[in-house]
Image 1 (tube, rainbow, N blue to C red):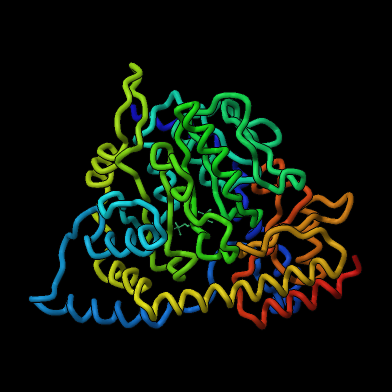
Image 2: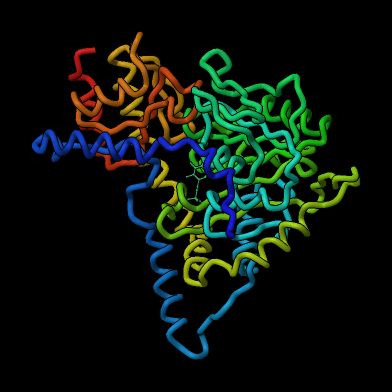
Length: 412
Ligand SMILES: *Cc1c(COP(=O)(O)O)cnc(C)c1O
């Protein structure tokens, strides 16, 4: 008899994006004319084409692969040295942050990295997540058996939920209780909140005191325009001893369909054996990555490398400016109709309070029915997301402007 992983049966069936897709389909079938006008601001996927520097580099790489001399088979699982060097040099050392080339591990996505990291962590860890939250952190812990069952609100027994509310600016302070592993994401998906240096320093101090591990998701780092806001957890002294950072080319370079990301595992980062000895995590991750992963394609890594060229950097800046221009338009529209608006300044997501007495899903249905615009209901990201909705700035300028017009036309 083959046994299945019972933990999968604890996962909540009504996952956010399938439910959005279902409601959009039902609406479109009932309203075929309105269906043609639907604008999607729901899933956080980029819309603009790959930067020209990436396209050129990838074309060149394809041509190399077509020759015996330029052909590449299996590459190093951790990523080619030239890419690891470009990452460490440009994203960290050029900003005064100490990160060595061999502390970078190139992968095919942050989503996978977030889930895979649990392979090297013990099952006895007390896990803390923010609420609302990127669902991947929760679901991968459920799959790994780190939780009990979900209650009616969708909260899993055994997880520590850190409430993110308008009152704390959607940045949770460290809890009074003990957590072994903490997931932090800044700039935040879904709320668009960013953490100040002081707020991150409080988390690093907490992690030092509790010997805990911070899993820091910086997928939206490129969207930070405020020079006072840290772009990396390693800007905080002591973070090399307590944090792993997740980065992705999905949102800065438009790599959501191309697939390339990396994590930083400092060699100074320790965790405890069951017996209480402190050991470095770097060799464990290296072993895991080289055993279970066979590297990102040469062509894609050449494309990622091109993001660090002068042209690539300028093209990323232009993409970010484009999406943040949309964010400004959407923010202004939501404010103009009297809604409370958060985020959308150092992040491509706008987090909006629903009008009084309106739930997130009621708001979803209204936006779909009255404006033919797909947003994301806040409650899909956790109980604390109830009463909010997320608008993504990933769109064409014309669509962002049209969404703004339609929002203003709704009888709020
Ligand atoms: C989009 C996103 C990522 C990036 O995921 P990839 O798998 O690299 O595309 C990571 N974290 C968050 C919170 C995201 O929204």
